Length: 124
Image 1 (cartoon, rainbow, N blue to C red):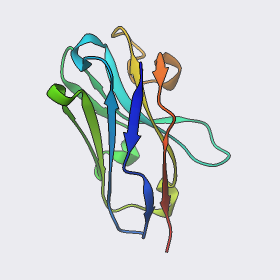
Image 2: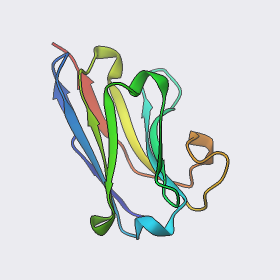
Image 3: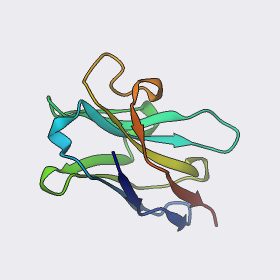
């Protein structure tokens, strides 16, 4: 699976960014797709995923009120709208795909394919 991630950058605290992840396959052919974050010196963690066969979206607790995942099946693209950004939100944001839906559909250890990441820096 080839990924094209975009939308990262430098933003001030309180600002917004919209990440995009385009894949070269059909979204509907996969089990789940989502966003994961890795801050410097920390482990990779899930941010938000969508279970593609069921259109169920999961958010980790700290992202639920500020981030929104959406998708465009026709364009094979998922988006992550991030609002009210904080310095702690800084890190590499990875798009990842799980081939077949399963219990670990939004766990980083369960994903099968990964993009290269988009760098988000929240700083004044």
